[in-house]
Length: 620
Image (cartoon, rainbow, N blue to C red):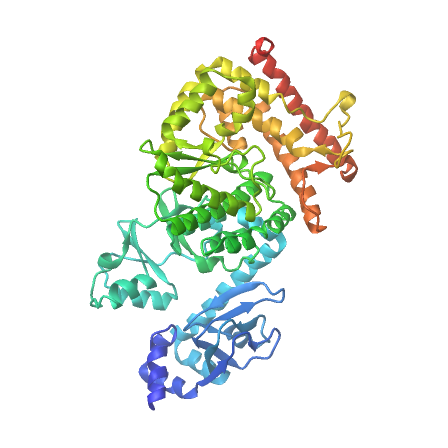
């Protein structure tokens, strides 16, 4: 062989399925190869073209896309493509294009088929991959039909294959061979049927090759012990949040504490770039407010697509909140990078709809900050800069400043733990109607970033105290009646009489907020830690605060009202308008109007019951 051919020989020997060939057979293959250079953005082959080669990527990157330009796969060094059309003797079903300058080996189809006949392992590699691609295509068809509904499916539905496992006493050489043969980038390490570790190709490079370790080193010495895992029943977007939080690319999937599979970042590439899963992943990479703002501008379109995919309003709220959480966390990280480490421990809190996992694409920002009690006034210079950086960044990302100034940039809501304890003591033990009207948002509070134990200490104290404070609960009940459904006598809609939204009604403040207020009240009365409105209603049923029928009715009413609101906003996005909460009865069908009135009637009935539960007539 020539020097060049020897170099190609060594390269192919390190990649499946060429590593299954005998040296003589591999040498013959090398002699048949053609090396072709493709510039970035150039097309290797188009859709429905006749194909006469097996392609193997030497360097660069290639994308495969279908007839709708949806991304099917991203290929890297050593990966093969083009073989489905060779196996079927048919035109290509995908388009292949280079996203980087690339060098690609081309093997003529005659040589490809000859090798398949000579080597069963080589043949199985491609024929089984073709079967897997058919399975992928079937799933892709399902995605095309249901759109972004897959986002709200469970993580276990994303599993593509059986997990590839190895014992801890096996050598890293055996691990590398297993990875290469199975064409995977990780192995799960099992002992007595239990997951004890994971070893990835990155681990091999960093912990074996870079450190000059022997190939006979046991896997147990280089694996990541007790890897982060996720339940198969978690949502797809929760998987991405976990990957982002822990900076991992492989997540083992468990069901009833038993391993059922693994999902990697590349498994998720079939989603569109507008997809929330991609957005959450992109957030962590941004190095500026401008970069984060470019992502947040895609949010209305994300919501529109989710609505069209018939995702539930509750699921949409969770997905939108996941994106909002990611942006806010990244802003805090950027602030700390710019300002340096915080002088004392703190926790950043999100409030209101974001805390409840019910954010919309139009939500303003509500946040606060709790310091460790080691706080000294000289520390506030740092935290003032941090809070203004984050608040200004959120505003630039489409989360407007809170009209009531409930933000950590306001020093009143940036205080040590003992001051926060004083705030809640005053609200609970000396309730003032006007103050409580504005402070109810602080009973929807969730830690986002920092030392969460500061919040947990405060939360325990509040949840233990609230159920005993009947006057406070009565005032909260009175506040829950401030927003009434827009329904008058004879079940007629009550519409705005003037202004910009005349002859419309406000679905958020007149429809959803009354249910949110009721659920918060029930949770506080029972000392329930849940924040999400649907979860609070379920907990209220379990605590016998409301009947199962009443609770289910409120849950259904909230979901229906929220669905109508989201669909209305989706239409506005499609029309290029700024989404709002105001709907005209004229844009609803008779079916929708009738059911919306039913939903409002349910809320009216539950609000009327409050006067029986609390002595509201004695309150000033």
